[in-house]
Image (cartoon, rainbow, N blue to C red; front, side, top):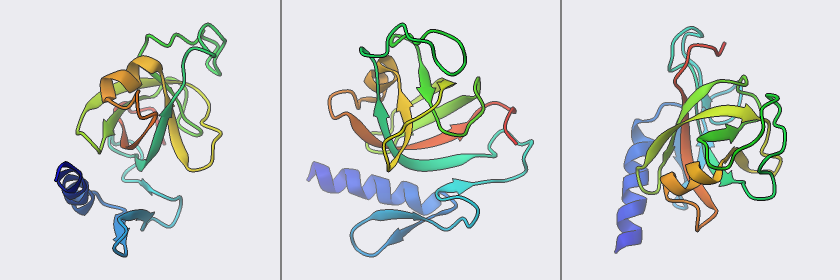
Length: 149
């Protein structure tokens, strides 16, 4: 029953998000955007110029204290993330579509380098989003700063 409620909530969210549609009965996500998969762009100077939906993972203990692509040391207790293309220093809202929890992170590193994943979150971010135990979650990423474009 709970699984059906969660899937129903995800389905409702997907119906209102532009650039996403449901393929078949298996609730797999595909993009309707042509430029880049699962990305929806508006005016490049608008805060909501970037939205991406996909799988998030998290990283922590093995990387704690190492230098990130931004030149800062990774701290698994901060709300940070690794993203392949968002500018370093970008602040983004990450929403766990499986439970509705949402946080703001700062992009400080590059990655993830595992196919099918769109963002790597710090351990603290994963914990606050309620995905630490599972390791993966379906998320929506929305830029909250004006430095993209």
